[in-house]
Image 1: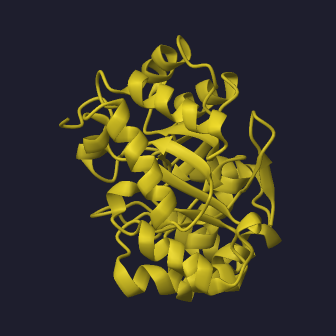
Image 2 (image 1 turned 45 degrees about the vertical axis):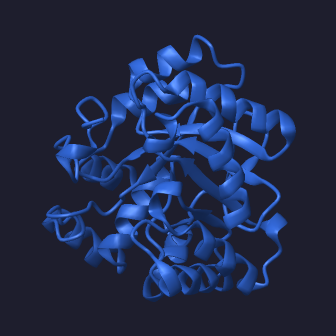
Length: 275
């Protein structure tokens, strides 16, 4: 599995599995199956309501915890409650996930007036050794600029929505300039957006004898991004195969040309999210 080096020296597998919307037995089973298939990067969040099941899936897989890169995120409602609540939530995440440490802890959204306290609490957990790396999710440039004014530890990752209709070129460039890796969530779009059904992607799928989903994931990893398509067992082998081919420069540019700055859900805009 190809890895990406973070600014603190840790390595993260470039492709993992996301667990958003997965609950109960489905979450436990899909995580176990993902690890058995060869994935070593699992992404969850406090807000997903499945940390306990994700943790059990990891245990059930029999894969050594030290071989797994595990991410979770601090929920927005917890951030509003202040430092003590954030600390308690991290301890609860550790317990639910059945682990002594979290590889990557993210601020899930840039909640106004709550980021500084949350970040400083997360930094304390790095110092305690209970969290290896910390980062952010859904941050735009001005959110990062404000955070970097007081952060002792630079964010290692910004997890943002990226797909061929939402390429995020400027945001990605700024993160890289700041030494922050970018992780793409929602690579196939969500809701009413049918990314993989786009005629251009279907045509490229025929050209390369791959699926449109594989074309999208290859476009993402070839840009040097990390990505976490949702954990669906029938797509595990397909997703892992994206490291076996390369898109031409011309076809990379063609996929990028599909950009419409189109979010899968208007409510997911960090500038207008109804906090």
